[in-house]
Image (tube, rainbow, N blue to C red; front, side):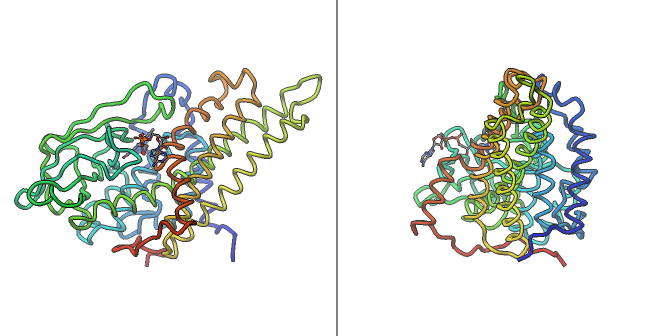
Length: 399
Ligand SMILES: Cc1cc2nc3c(=O)[nH]c(=O)nc-3n(C[C@H](O)[C@H](O)[C@H](O)COP(=O)(O)OP(=O)(O)OC[C@H]3O[C@@H](n4cnc5c(N)ncnc54)[C@H](O)[C@@H]3O)c2cc1C
């Protein structure tokens, strides 16, 4: 076993950290206050290569491994969750799923623009009546000549108003499909198609500097060449996407814990009570120690999943464990960070209240706390087992 990170990993961490400090942090408090998302940041992330960090060079990507993707997510979320969310939906849920399920023709068609950020992508599974119960989605796809017609709506979609294209999971309908067990299909849907529209969701608790919304399909016609996998593969495509998305959420959550430690170690050394820094108080030390625990356990969990992706091992259980553990640890760290800051943690003069609000969302999306608890128990009880996948993510090194 080798636990060391490579020189490339350390260079990518340094580059992502510098990028976050110069491009994300300035003006962040105002953007968060005003719930204003910065479309220009996506272009900068693309130009810096982060959106294509683990995409093969032959498609215009950085050609780095999957652990590097985790490191980028950690460093970006250390600055702000909204930047990591872009990595989650664009790179994890969309681009990597295309790398896994796309035909050579589809990869050549879409990956170069996604890897460089010329096109921004989202992932659309959730519907008003289907979140955890994803099998209950009602957006339909009906075969029509050499394509499909989509009708329905999706909600809580990150980058709903910014993304150029979405990976959409729909229920196959029409003809004999209606009478059988539900079957699903996955499509890459361009937002310029007739009948597509989107609307922003306002008043969010967190990720206020990020775009979230609803998308609508009113007789949207997509060509059959836009389907990932075959008819009936849609649910498996969605679950593969979540294996990638959850990895980015798990690694990003470590970034929140690091940010809490950055803020709290400074504050605990400076703030005095009774003439002594609060960092000398054992109960404050206990909170700091617990954050250290979350950071280091969290890194081990996501590094392991990154390695499993590199060598091509199935990791659905491990990534669920990493996502579940790290999101809970990040929320706990942010809560403790407010405690350490006392009243000053309760307003946005210090960033910890933003960490608290932002870390809450990740406990919900990409599988709630309860869903991952059930998943872990079911694996252990022998009630859940992974079936071999039709298509696997390319292993690293890519060539
Ligand atoms: C900021 C944000 C961004 C998002 N981005 C996207 C995106 O880009 N694309 C996308 O498709 N979706 C996205 N989502 C949606 C997200 O994935 C769903 O909100 C999530 O899957 C939970 O679904 P729900 O909100 O419908 O809650 P429900 O499924 O209605 O759950 C409500 C409660 O019931 C509990 N519950 C549900 N089922 C069970 C069960 N079987 N046993 C025990 N408890 C259960 C849940 O744990 C939860 O506590 C986003 C959500 C947020 C908040």
